[in-house]
Image 1 (spheres, rainbow, N blue to C red):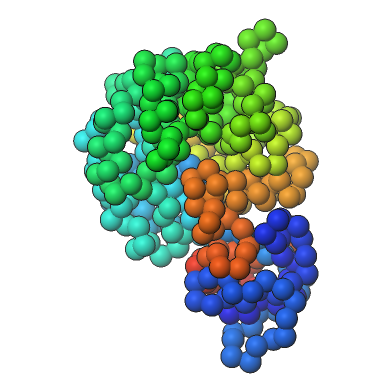
Image 2 (cartoon, helix red, strand yellow):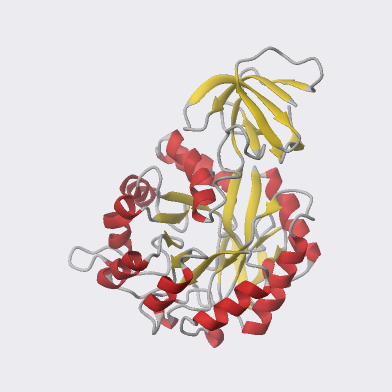
Length: 382
């Protein structure tokens, strides 16, 4: 495939005029070049090519959820996600029993390489090692302390496809969990009542990710900086990446601008954190076995607690650009930064020779014109 005359965000995320040549599922060349006679050619004059989005935190969409633990659910998620520019994703679990998590993880493993749209990178394990006081929409019946042995059984049992595991570091065994697990699986600070010093200790112990910054954690106050303060203070120095749900509901646009600025160009990660209601009308849904009520696109438990989002990566990218976040940082936050967070940046997340041809073609208003996954066109609105 030969994509010509495009503005391409290159491997250092600078927009350049270039052509892209693919060979099978990988990128063969990125440069102005002569049009080959033996390739299908697409003229992208006036259009921009960026890497495909990596949604590392998504519970569900299209009326289905990772917790359904069926191939049909993951296929429906994959098919919808690719229409929004997502080329790969991490189905995300909830706080559940060991046995339920085993079943969910087995299903994800069995579906890898078999879905038709966005492909599966592996599992995002959100819970059960969280603080009860910050459980949010997680099921309190299954909240428990970090358990290295239990996690290792789950990790090995699914063939090591867990790409990130969440913990509240202040819980008993939290720092020991980070020190032991981080070398083979990224550990994220999440659903936590930790103060600044506890969050700082977790980062110093090896945690390099923070799940949905601002939400279900201690905020920034001038005498009590909390997890958010630790993120702002340490992200650039320690290489900490912070998830941000950019639907305009979970976080005020001003607070988003502050966070993007404070954690820096390499520290911000856009996530959908969407539930099964994403892409569906208002109504009653579920999340982690709990009923969720969606009104005006906002998902809440009966108690009024926010229960994930109904957004998607494409809309969130457009949101943050409209909020004033620099375009380069916005694009990196949806592509290479999440790829680095789950340790797959050697394969995807940027447009570079040898990497997978995971690409999104967009117009000047950031509308999607084409989505290419592993060198295969999945969406074509040219």
